[in-house]
Length: 155
Image (cartoon, rainbow, N blue to C red):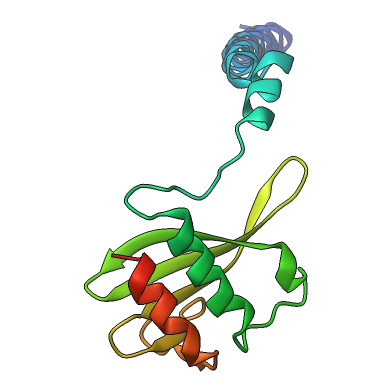
């Protein structure tokens, strides 16, 4: 066999392999494009999610309970650089015995952002910032005369 024929056969085999790989790649990208198109939210989805703003859960906690907690936080030494204290909202995440784990958040036009996590111990009258490390909380000062309203309004 002549060397030129061998070169032609190898070239055709290489081109054939490249064409097959190109077809597989375009099939893969078509599948990816289909998945992306299916998972991309439509305008209706965006409108629905924008109208669903998370609000503090009332659950077994009365509005008076939330007010007592908010008053304690407003009187506390808690500080944030991004939001005014008056704009902070409170959500009771869970109760661990006499301790309430609180999520502090700010609600903007189209989203909300968590500012901090606090732990309020009703029995020991402690307010702690547990945002960075729950095992090493930062003690916060607050007006302890407000604890009676908390005990009266929060179970």
